[in-house]
Image 1 (cartoon, rainbow, N blue to C red):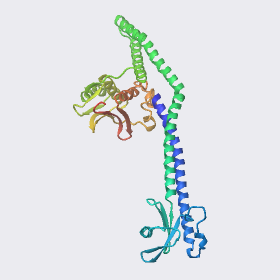
Image 2: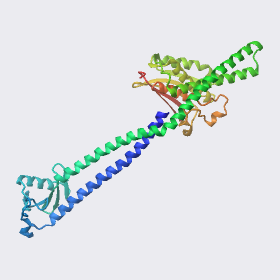
Image 3: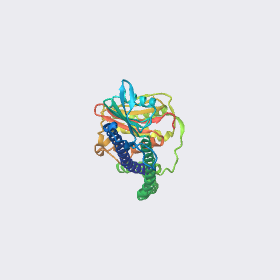
Length: 401
């Protein structure tokens, strides 16, 4: 549980950080690109407004002591004849073939302005005149800046992830301590209760053999056995939480095990006027623990018999899909509402309808079944429909891994 809680803590914090940082990064990229586009469109508009013939000659003279360079990075061309373009900007030196290629490429587009990413040159058309802006340096700088932002973004996410892991350990330390104390208490208390309870049950058996069975002895023995089962369940869950005992796997025939358990429950089903069907794919072998899987199947079938009304049907099926085995226990005439369904595998959870039933347990059976499934790398789920009934579905890897 603590691992799941820690993962949830890290996941929530990283989701918030990811959302905020991604929003900021995208906003920055969009803003710079909008600004970049606005700048080259303004430069194109100024170039298209310039009347080259009316510019004073001093405008083109170099400034003494400074390197000769164009007064700006824009130039334009005009179509003198169809498909023939003439450079209008006298301070720009450009190859004739390059000029013709640029003009033809700009003219072939449907847009009146745009940007050639592969060349780093923007263009704008107005009548028979096309203006260009050389933005190779600016575009390279923009790309470099965005890659830098991306690197900072990834680095920040990694840093926040490490910080989240560290903070999760600190934040969950009191919870971990309380959880360990609780589990230790359950385990120790169960061990301490188990011994005197065993003595009590043994004395009840001796008393019954000497004086004969009575109503009070039978009731005391029944309650003692119920308490013994509860203690065993608590011990199983405590050991599972602590992970003290590794699960021993062996090759077993799951088909034979399902048939065996289903056969054992035919008599209880018959006593309650229920029909128990089996549809088991034969000879399906997995790696697992026979005793624990038998306990899981018994829990599912016991629940199905307890909560299926008289005259209902219970169907046990085992089928193979791809590399997985699907075990389904279906009971008709039983509906579990969604608000109960999502808590069905919680410990000590019991539906209100079950509290008034004498055969109702302590709400640990399905929790134990889910834990056994987890220990086999399997998944136990439940679904319920008012017209169809309730299904408990165990999906387990066919290879047992």
